[in-house]
Image (cartoon, rainbow, N blue to C red; front, side, top):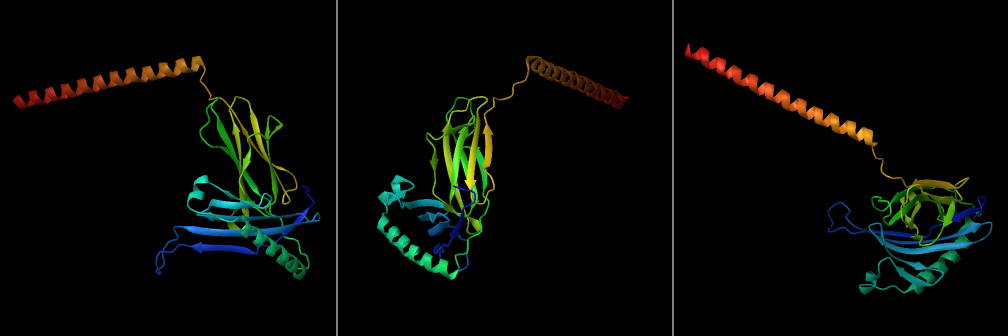
Length: 258
């Protein structure tokens, strides 16, 4: 993807339905989104798009436009529902026709590119030698066209890498997740590199493995000795205070007898 390319993006269908139990004003507890977008890139005239349905910001399914099939986020969803991918393909054909009309009306005005942000973090607490997953979260994507590349110690890694489709984000932008299975080893350096039209250069986010910091033996001995000393001081001080308190009680009794 060349850095000089631009894109015209005209979302034509973005429907949000809110589940509201009753007519009275209540807080929205559940949202359902049916998202469709289609875009055409300049100057290469490449086309891309997506059809996706989600509930409460969790994908239910999307339609793979190249394979012309429905891809369910969880296989169990197919037990309760079904969706014919041909419906999404028909919508895309209609959007492609409308796209040309809108491009002519806008005098082929190019959309403004937005620089995305990226964050890298492990799926679970890191233990050396314990299999884990690195997650690269890219947000504020517009237009929804980008490349995510993983590197380990400077070498490109592609085995096992998985990506989600584009999810709707705030302000009409998009977000995407990329997953890299890995085994943490001391000294390994991982980089998630993002390329997008809104960036003048690749956006890189680094994560590296490191062993837990252990105290030197001499330092451990000093800490143990200091703890033992403080314990002894506490015991001695407590004994002295207890002895003085008993002496005070004895003196009071003698004065009372006189």
